[in-house]
Amino acid sequence: MELDLGEFPTTGWMIKRSDAMIELVLSHDEIMAGEFGESVIAGMAIDTNELGAEADIPAEIVKRARVLIVEVKPESAASLRRLTRLHTENRALSIIAAVRDPSIAAMQALLRAGISDVVALPLARRDVEAALDRIRGELEQTAAATAAKGKTVSIIKSVGGVGATALLTQAAALYARRESDRGRTTCLFDLDLQGGNAATHLGLGSDLTVSDLLDAGKRLDPAVLASVATEHSSGLNLFAAPTELMPTDAVGTDQICDIVHLASTQYGTVFLDLPSDWTNWSLSLVAQSDIVFLVIELSIASLRQAQRQLALLVKLGVNPDAVQVVVNRVEKQMFKQINLRDASETIGRPIGLRVISDFALMNTALNRGTMIGEIKNKSAIGRDLEKILDAIDMLFERG
Image: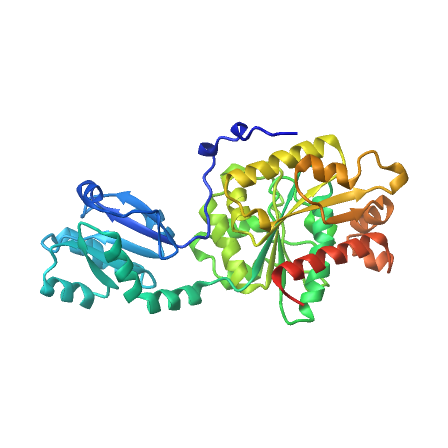
């Protein structure tokens, strides 16, 4: 069954990716005069912003940048003040001044002011490459200081009601126990802002939730993050969904991505339970994830929607190798109307993971807020969950 990708217009989505960015801030004339060539230099994407040499630079541009190349007019006091303010307020940011016919005295003054380098205008690609090479050590040091130490695993579902959250809470708790033996920590964010039940499934109660992290704003730091987490007996740290319904579009993409990035610097593995309906921020989190598990079931509606989900992810540039399909609630052979081969052919992807259907066992575990293994030591579901954990280890090259 072919799917028309035209039904997914890309212009409607805005995805924040984890790619390193070079932000160019130049006036209209300098943009027209420059020769930038391809949109990537030294492995970093280039984003061009048209602003006068004295205009304030929006905070979102500065926040995106790993390297900021900004036009400077040495004869303009306002332009120099802008540069000084940028450096003072963003000391970890590599700033390159772009100057017309820079004199030796002007270059020395700019470097003494603390900027990383100076390039001549009109801007040429080779000059930018040379400047980046000169500050390579500075860039590597900054990247190492801010790099996420952990891996991110997102769980999305083909349709609501496929049991993705129930599956995730069990798998995340089991993986936390496994990782604890290796000296690494694990957390789970319940980002289903309108229907999250991860806390209930794990038998946990918490006065603080994801909404408290969102409210923290600029106060967000490792201490605030840790204060919101609730620890499960397995060692899993849960960031529970809000107790009151929140509109999914009320969450800012930068805001939620910053929270998850901070968590990935504090935990070895970060699991994300995402809402059924796509938003800019949920797509951004998926695009930045190391593994994406798409949970489906063997029904026509689920397979059709899974096909559409996979097509959307491909069109938006999500790495297909990161996406793994998990079939939940697989019935025994005699009761199946659709088999795994049919499902694989329908969605156009191989299916390597499945979880057998055992409603009584899973439902008992969820109602009690406990682990399946505590109810039944050995079970088909338990074995299938271990295979999911093994897949994570294999993809992360852990063990």
